[in-house]
Image (tube, rainbow, N blue to C red):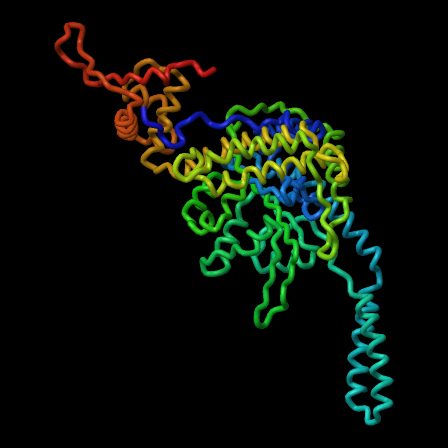
Length: 491
């Protein structure tokens, strides 16, 4: 039979065993408490780790290759999946860390704002007085005072209080936020509003992608426009962690610029099995010691000093075995990207970034293990990152396959999955309709008939005429028989 896009079994759950113990225990407990797929908690946790690690450490992959620890995640689940509850639990420590640092900032610079206002006012008065001075000696004296005041203003001028997270924000405001926040910020949300912003909601439909694309790789960003202050960011770092409804992915497929410019290839995707309809009403509470440990873990990484534009990068290295494992992973991946023969050529924009994505995840896992940046990343840590990367590839194939699947094929894919799941040896249109009706694509029996026509043309099913026991008069409904491959038990 000919393959149908998206017709395979749904990808498996997140490989939580690849996570460090403290992260694994937290996400498993959170999933149990909220009765949600562990994938959602794990993906959001990776985003939170990336928020506190961005612009604090980088990872070296050999041959002069260095990656920032910026990981974008996008998890798609339908409504009522408790997305907000999971995002809130994962990000609560980030807001607490932000409040703590802002309070310390305010305490350190207490009174500076008032002294700055006085110094600015003094400068204005001195400038006015100097403009009216008649003698050169008087002007020189006033200029010396102005120099002293300018130095005082420079000492009193402080950066805005630090932030870890922003929410719905325009590209212009994002640039200002990055410049005011030493170049880094995170967006972790249970909504897809950031897509609307960068795809042109505030710019008459024109996507504003330059900054967001540069902020994934840390490339310098410069903006000079008439009537606005210039924006200069040498190492922009924006972390995106989005948990959205599936229609957001469908809408991005209708915005070609988002994929053509490389935006969609930068996300790590997850389309987990929904738990709605199977959740327990007697879920356990999230153990407080696990929530506290998660807070301490993030706070410990956030205490690593940020590398400012004028300071050297804090680069982590792989030990020889980890480096060899990563090179082996790259060697196996590369032929699959070939334009003509590679099975991943149709999604090369995503798969081409997979080796770098695995490298970044390895850096996050290393920090989440509580290890210092000066210690080399181990083989076991890299093995966990590779396992997560291979899992992410299956979900990306499902997402990209969904983009390529036409609406006409959806019913055929659903019928195919029903046959594979139930291993039904034969069935009629009526029986298939009774089993599948209620799904959005299956409003009438003709929808099932159309799906079966597609499957028959592709060789997945064949039909036979049914006759009465006397072998003469035919029954109204024919019988469909699946291809033998569909009846095999899945190992």
